[in-house]
Length: 349
Ligand code: SF4
Image 1: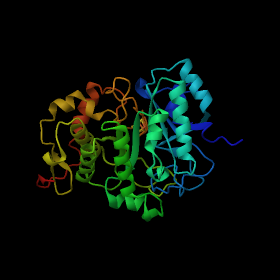
Image 2: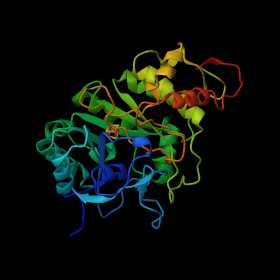
Image 3: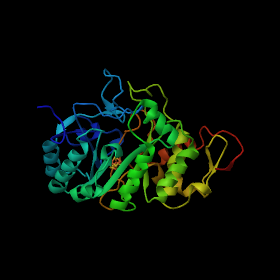
Image 4: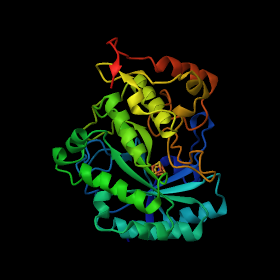
């Protein structure tokens, strides 16, 4: 019998190591607190996103990676049994869906099993294209307490180019934001997050304005740094410079924590942040802004979905810290925040 959902799911490599299904340990003793799962089918995802490892237009002989790492398939029974035996500090499970005709029904089944058979909090990572005509109240009733929607691209033009008509893909910008709005109606403000990927060609100003748009809807942003997946259309694109990523991380933190707004920030002609509209020294020293942003754990505040090394190789500078950055990390971040800034005259963005 083919190993497909709802009986089987993919897990991130970090999840497989944490569950003891694969050997390995984490660089600098990072500890995974959110278990990331994906529904799995024999057919590729019907999406054709230019950067995604699951994409239907990815070269067939490419390594099967997604968000940089392998996603091995395991029986849901085995995963649930292992988590019940020893939860290993895990606080949340996230179930993601590819664009597939069965994925909504299977999502409900898998969410419901976690709800009945574990005490982990449950996020559903929704693909609005695969949720057409579906009732999000069913998902809440099945046991999900949070929803994520991967908008990924910061502007409608980039979305269209890399996820929509530009790649003959099925996803539509308006439908994704409509999905975000529907999710807020059902789950409430603060219970929905969007994913945005830094480095797909947007300016810092464009990314920060989109983060503010979501915030005004009651939606936090979970940031990712672009990583080129082999065999995808964007396989040769470079990762965004660290300076760009750090400035967007800090702006996201300021906006999502309600400390300031995009309109208070100042940008240069290249759209880079020149001034955050507040004294950033204490924020940088505290380091919280540079930790992974994601759905929270049981205290409702500390991020559970910490995705260690999901955005870079362990040998590279850490982009999303899965733990509290140390003093040496903070010193590096202070330097990185100024990297790559063009010397143009600052103006309000
Ligand atoms: S932030 Fe993490 S837990 Fe939340 S929806 Fe995204 S991947 Fe899932």
